[in-house]
Length: 204
Image 1: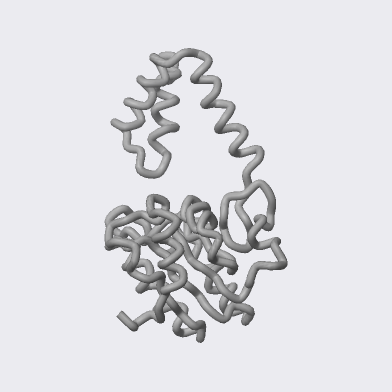
Image 2: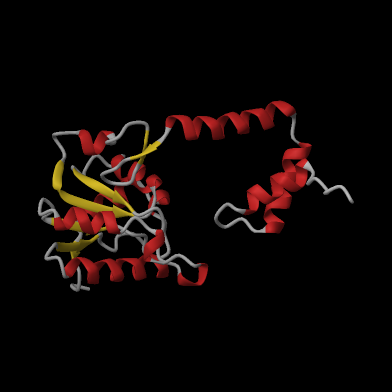
């Protein structure tokens, strides 16, 4: 009876990498080749960073932000306005908006945006928790802060339909943010203007 062939370390790593979102087989092989040529110290630092990430970081049960405590510092802050929720795509958007020092409400992190061609539907995003927060009755305004891109606008329209049925006041960050710009790449001044000049959904 022939002995079963054991996958090599390269094949095992490539297989694991290819399971990550947005990483196909070819990209996984390129990453594996890079790590093969890297020093042992660099590879060990990467491995330790991944382990520390899993060990130390959590997802806030309230807003979905990546944090080292649950609830996150923003949700746990009694001085923040819990009735005003700013919805963003990624944790990096929270960091960018916090730098402005203007916004004093709380956040909700979707962990992505709707992208049907990439297989990202409502079920893959942190949407159900947002709807539950609104249905809880403590949220008086939801500010849609998805990026001004085709996918971001599509996500905002979907959320607006869902939230409108639940009676929440809806506003959208102002278009001081140029179309196609990522929030994480916008300046503090632009983000500050967008927050202060937000408008009701449907106002144009």
